[in-house]
Image 1 (cartoon, rainbow, N blue to C red):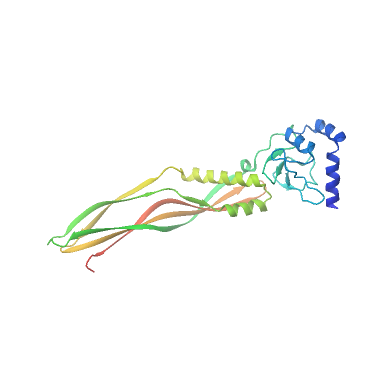
Image 2 (tube, rainbow, N blue to C red; image 1 turned 180 degrees about the horizontal axis):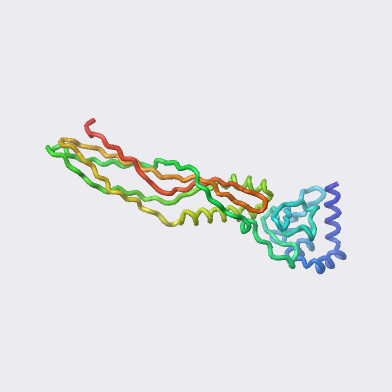
Length: 256
C-alpha cells in the first residue's frame, strides 16, 4: 500500500498541468521547483532521489522542528525542508516561510567535567656528581616540556545519537563542527598554539654521593560530557582534552 501511495504521489506532482499552478499557489523555492520539475532529482547533485517502484527514496523530509517524517506524509503544511541522502544538500519547500535554521543553531550546549587521568609521555635523566666532595651541596636546575591542547570527541557516539534523534546527515556534520567549536571556546584551544611548561628543581646532594634525578613527564587529560539540548532530545557526547602537564621526580644513588 505504501509503495502504491508513493507512485500515486509522484505521478500527481509530475503531472505538469497540476504542477505549475501548485508552484504559484504555494510559492515553492527555486530548489524545490527544480526538484519537482525534474521528477524528483536532487537540485544539487541531480541524482534521482524520490524513489521508483523498485528503489527506495534517497530523500529525507523534515518538519520545522527538525523531526524526520516519511516522503508519503509530506505536504505543504507539515514540511519545512528536504535533504538529499546522496550529497547531503538541503533545501526549503516554500519560499514564503522563514529560511530554515540549521538544527545545531537550535541546540544548547552545556559542558560538564567529570574525571581526570594522567598519561606518561616520556622521561629525562640528570646526574649530579658530588662524589669527590666532603660537604653536601644544593643544586638547582630548570626542567621544561612543550605541550599542546590535544582533544578528542567521540563522533561515533554523536552520529549514533543524532541518527536515533532523527537528524539528517548534514545536520550531524554541522553539529559535530559546532560541538568542536564549543569545546575549543571553553578551553581556549588553538590548533597552532603550543605551551612550554617550566619549573625549577632544587636537589640536595650528600657528601661523597652521585645522584641520578629522573623526571617523568605526564600530560593531564580532563574528561567530560557535552550535553546538547533542543526541544525534543538531549544528546550526551563524551570528550577528553589535555589541560596541562605535570611530572614525577625520582632520585637514586648512581652507584646503587
